[in-house]
Image 1 (tube, helix red, strand yellow):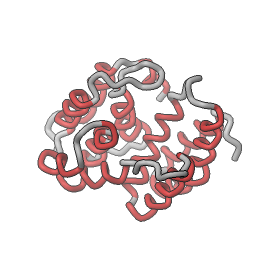
Image 2 (cartoon, one colour):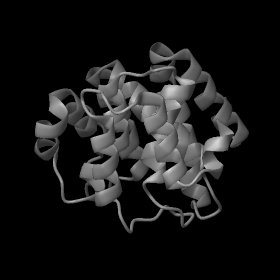
Image 3 (spheres, one colour):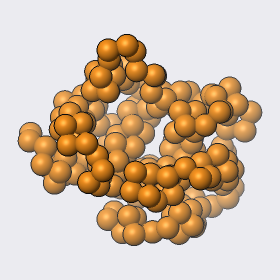
Image 4 (cartoon, rainbow, N blue to C red):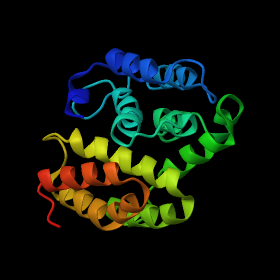
Length: 197
């Protein structure tokens, strides 16, 4: 799992497409191309290409969670595309179907309301995930796992404490019900980041 964090966007893409092939429905290779196009120029806080994040989320589902459903993998690759680009979920329907569009919708965080903290928004989101179903829950868990595994010193310390605690309290119980391997990886990453049980 740790070796994913030493790979470039191109290497992650090759690894993902090599594992799933190019004959899937919905088409994972097309999701990869769309993510590369729409996330061009976007960077993570550590300065790496943003597209490495959705590629790693898909690989965590595949390699750690042993999940190979093309709908789930396409949604993993596209999970930030509505939040971070001009596309909306309807734009995804034609090429990827309603299942992928619904999963991406469930990953799209709403804008903060006046006076609402990110921690409060996360708790509301995790509560809503309990109704969105297993695939949404495991997708968010893999997203959060990647975020925690790629933490760096740029993350504000006060937000980090809330982020980790919110993950343990709100998301980890949902993860246990979905996928034991992802649960253990997420729990271990929380412990390694100093989040008490």
